[in-house]
Image 1: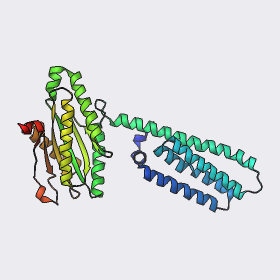
Image 2: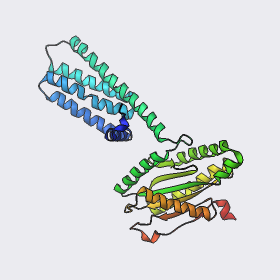
Image 3: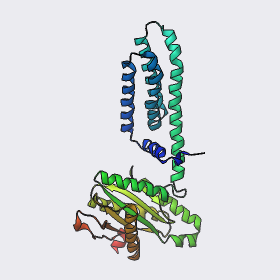
Length: 317
């Protein structure tokens, strides 16, 4: 039996609807509801409209319930039912109110069912999507989901003329923790890091586990300097989280910022960030290196400008 994932176009539309902002979903719901209501009242053929336009109300009801939840969906369903009922009172003189209410009851039930079903489908879709895209150990995106999310975010950043920073994060001496304290201790380190790193991300950022002790994040930024400051802040936050694990683990980070004109794809940026991470690790670990992506065409004066940042404790020494 074919699944939704067998039809990329359908799956992509559902995913786009699931990611739609509340304001946009509200606008689409109201506009479609007003349009259908206008067409419903405009036609003079009452029988044809009852057949065609009554079912058209399913669209705003389903959108509202899927994007905003069951309660909002039921509210839109109630409004749609009230509109169709009021049309019957307005355009029909020969049928009494009792008959109209009796005819409207099945429609109210149908509209409510659509709202409940759409909201339930959203919950199921979210649960399945989360299970399929999440790394079970850390709760962040798995490798495949990260590549999909980051590639889309990188393309969106270019369209919106924004900068995008890619972080390649490697946990220092993680293997020695597994060897000395056991894999359960290593799992706790990964879980703790995933929790802290995930909470450090903003809405719209992408964070994923791409290897055993390797993570990557793609984060939009307003400028090169802002990206540099954010990289330093995140490295410090990650370091403090690892210290709290009471294990001899730190992290080395390679940070690459892509300007809006940068044409590198995600794999190219990952390779550059990975190389920077390795350099920071060989320079002493517990540090980060930052640079502008190699083929950037603007702010060339920053190109090749690498900043080695160490922890406050190391700087004091």
